Length: 295
Image (cartoon, rainbow, N blue to C red; front, side):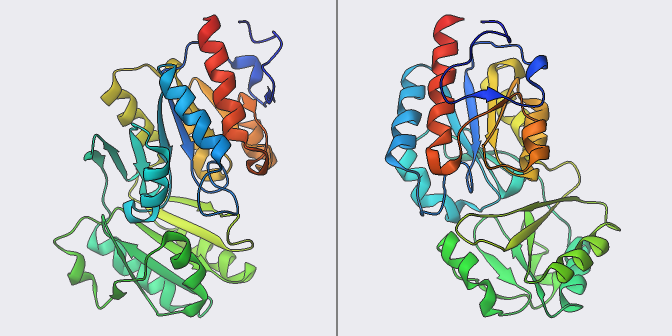
């Protein structure tokens, strides 16, 4: 199938369509919030069925999320997908029930992040371990996020020393005003770290700014996942809707943006599928199955 051929139903050209080289995809990774999951807590039956069809057709399926393991337990069970799966915005890659790659922030990083949170009453930060998280302040405005993940904070951060013996894959700032978000980004710009902002359709208007160790992105995690599977980037498809998915788009041979994604994300993709409310992941997976059958 050539790039200028008629696309399968549910797909249209993205900004990098002319660079797309269709091939038989062997591994698909999809973002969670705004991609696999919309306003509901779990994927729709149509998406679950499409994941099953893809795996039956010989395509491995995994999710890529800013959430921790505990925050995707229900979705993990619902999909029953083999993975590899990407967690903590790229700081952990898991397959067959074990961690195959990870990146951790250091105690010095945590101290700087806590100072930024303390300087603004409309900002707080969550500090994550491999399972569970602590918060810089017990701000009830963050409860919608805790409900989304299905987990309460383990407690308040008492000092950087409490993290000295544990890996810290990620920190997530939550800002409650536009001005607080701008101040946060200005402060984070001085750090040597991976910074990305994401949203969730389940919490409209709230922005989550993730901080990871330098080099820890969904894209670098995807490289680790493909190495684990022994597949080439040309045999990988990535589906997403937000700025933190762009690093996956840069790696995958087939990059697919959701229809409701911001223009710059659709421009970074080879293809655009339907919106999350229209089961865009299902349409994309069925299209990839069709392309695989023709390859």
